[in-house]
Length: 444
Image (cartoon, rainbow, N blue to C red):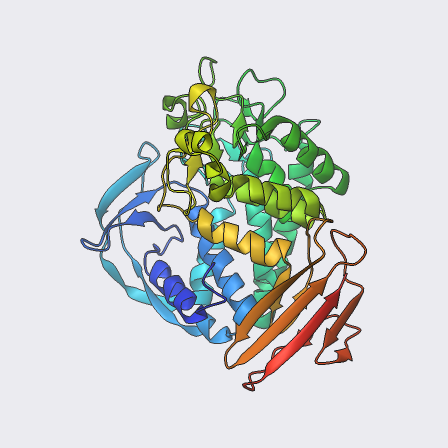
């Protein structure tokens, strides 16, 4: 997603490549080896949905509907029985191929597998791979996955409309309606959203818990998806700030407290030391989602503060800080440790999609550059102390010089939008490929 501003064709090729690693049943290879073509079939519940999510993002920025018509084959493999969580094998290319639209529909329909609380089943893990035994027996449900599925449907229902697929449109609208109710009732814990229901009936992300009282991504995606009730979104983000933002060590934790001694058995996440990787450290993907959620709520001061805080260069301001961080200060780390004498130490670098998300958070949500259906608008969420900033955006053969001025010390909101000397009441313009330089002035 991060490369879409520079080379959207590369993004398109990645979508086609990943669609070719999907099974006809709708699930996907969780990962594969390009050299051997071997891959792993799993019961992970989120990875298939990213195909639809990124497809919708590509169409939103490029308006290139031809992607939906591209024919791509599936891979074939033995289905996993109820006692098998994963199988690494060579999955041959199927004779059957369908267009990308159908690939996405198969993924979404497979993911709409709801449990007894009306929340999607987590399988052998969702975005958090470490939750490997939360729902691998078939009962556990993921509140985060419910919010993510809701957002995928937000993005894909308009595509169903374009395709005049009324049957899917109505089905998905009903799923959204039911999901929103379930997430805000059985997903709510009083001060924040729960994370998951386990096979054995235990709850992750509850105030009743000794460990994993609160998990980051259920809170942030309640905001990102728009599915959280309005008051609950603000309350849950305040709880996230109180429990998970560690300003002393410059990190935003994934969950707290870490798993260690309690009777909860969520999976291999518990094998990590407390504060390491998913087990209560900063998982940078989630830290960036925190920034995005704060920006969506209009808290520009918090969004910019947290962006600066987790920026790796900030972990190397002094010799002492660099000695604690221990990894490269010029590349995003997948994780940063969060407890005890390891707090503030960087984990895996050069191996994370978090860099793309951080770029997206800065460009789209803080600076506020929005490109949707060939329309350009600017919706900032910045520090109220910022006086002005500029963006140089290249669109095909044209260049857009954007200057944002903040004379009144605001964090959000645009008063005036002036394009090439003309005030635009709609505060957005259609992008033109005419080889010219265009001057945009935005007054907050």
